[in-house]
Length: 434
Image 1: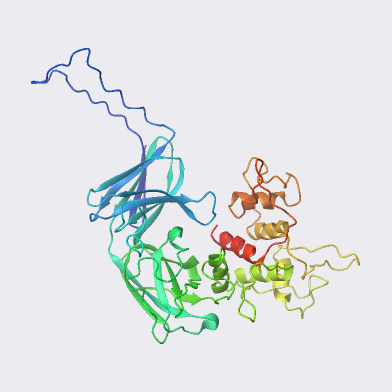
Image 2 (image 1 turned 90 degrees about the horizontal axis):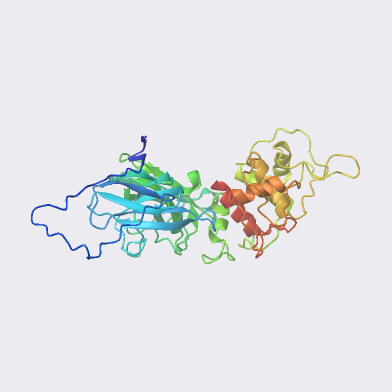
């Protein structure tokens, strides 16, 4: 049986593979029969019934257009792995075969270069991006119609909400392999528009589909994103200009574009989850205290109002600089603290470092304590039944942590090790994308 579903301008349907038997007569007029001694061509190999196919129609294309598919990376959470990119052009249809069953992202690619995912130095402008599930011995249909274009406009602001003049704005398709390209000249923005004196910008000619917007300051450094909707503009049809504002984060002296956690730390800044220090640094390798972790989570959730009328923890009075964040940790059930030997209220121990097991527990509780479906312990040093087992298993299954390699055995989680500011940035960045 086949089914269909429409997503914007994309139609998805699945059908089982059909086998067609064609019989050709050997006695057609003018045909000379071969000698019985003549070797015959070997029969084609049987199809691999464990694999699946993505195929469909493609209308409105030009010679250089194509279709690309990617899937979530198994090794780098939050990133994608390339699978296939095929030229379609004016052919009207495409097919990608021999795919392992699982989830994929399929995108229309305009102006691609054979042998690579980018067109020139700017990157291929992608249109509609569709999520599909490939099953064994079946074909998943994704039909593309090359749509018209759309415009976006907005205002670039800096820390404190001040408009930024002379900032460079860029766009890229919502495919993560474009996000780590340094500098503002990324994506499909023609001419890299610059904001006016009021920080305003307009970008025209964008293809229909989800587009990621970012910006760079006048120095040409890419240091921004969009707080709303994770930086993705959902342009689904032609019509009025889509409005979206861009927030510049701080430029940290110790986090250059080439830093291994540049994207994650920059996201912490423009999302207003964490700022830097007075000297303009972020100090990525500093260990995170429990009070700082409370602040990060509290800010991530939008600084909710607190209803507790009295301090919950004995060591966090109402005049404590992190009082609001720590009270929220108690009220939301993220932390119950430690036993107070004086038999009073529990202790939060705000200046103690945050261990990897505590951080896993905070995130797991904030996610609603989901149940892991992993059949056995993922990490070598986290045994089933332990206090933090459920939280750490969820960290592994959700892709938040892959642990430390421990060949030839399972990776290790290192429960009691403290976490650094760059590590927390990475965990929260991944958590935000679950």
